[in-house]
Length: 174
Image (tube, rainbow, N blue to C red; front, side):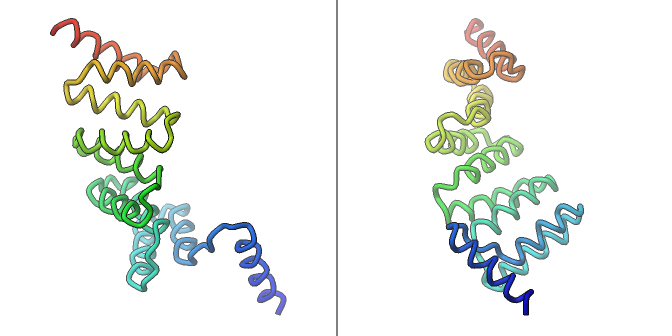
């Protein structure tokens, strides 16, 4: 009886603090992931979805696992599903941008990073990703502006310094 009371109290505490209850399937998938059992974690998440437990958190976890397994197209699908359920999910926009980068889909990555920055203008990683995407699209001037924003917060950031140097070299050539 005390175990039942403890579980009930735990659920009440979650409800009281405004946090949504954690899906048992998601909790099991996280445990499996931490044990290095990525495919088993994916199976757990897929099973939850098949049983009607559709949530942004489950799709986000799937996206993360697919990314770690370098299954970037599958990760894109998962993050797009997150955004269909939770359009303001800033991390999903950012992670989607990273996946698009891995797939060399620079224009789509640009859009994802821009949406990330609309929600969180101070996210340095998104600013850097945007600069890199713009550089790959042969848009060095706006890329320089992105790299400058990164360097304004982290003056020794090697990737931003390199990106800015490449961008400046392209501008000089033109």
